[in-house]
Length: 283
Image (cartoon, rainbow, N blue to C red):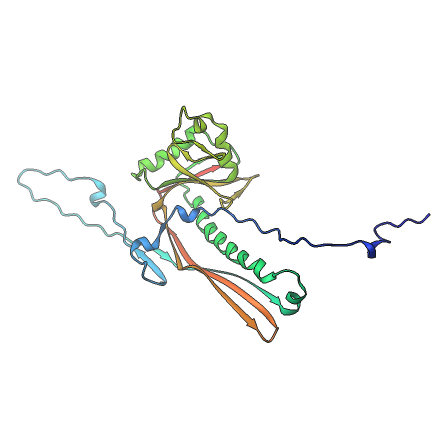
């Protein structure tokens, strides 16, 4: 006996299309919140530049005050310090091309559907280039990859910044999603008996030891191997975005009868003080 299966009945089986598009998921971008923007160095009116040189000073006589002896002349000190250099050397783009024929036959606005994605890709990349600096702080590291962090590790990270005389203001924790969720398992971080000002907000620990906490998928690493979480002071890095936003170009190509769209961004970032951040290895 022969049956009509989906193979034999294929011409009668209908495909229908949704009247809405399942849009891509936007990502939480946080690392640009943790750095000093170059505009704060007095270059806000400058559209662009190749390098930003930031003068740096160190303590005279290695930070040691001199003892004055009776009837002796004082000693004058001077330093030969070197500036930090921020190079504008990051140039990224995203583009797509929609042929008129395909657009005419489609029941959707293809260009409109994909236009937001090229911006999302660029700002994710911008955030990721800053996130990539975290594991450069090899002299200030706590924790182990893919392992829950302990209170001792968190307080040691804070001590690193205290020992380097970084002010309490301007500090931020940045965790991966699993690193952030592990905090909910410790009563000290979520109980009002230990923490004031609503320690948990919508299932998220808002601060850790009174230091604001951020979390993002852009933290480098993986759930299996662990992530490069961090405790950072705003002086750890300086960042500059040329033009301050993605530049978008649209073009009606008469040769190929298509609509083209491209977006690009140019930026630079530099690590400043090597003691201004702590690499917190963890989940």
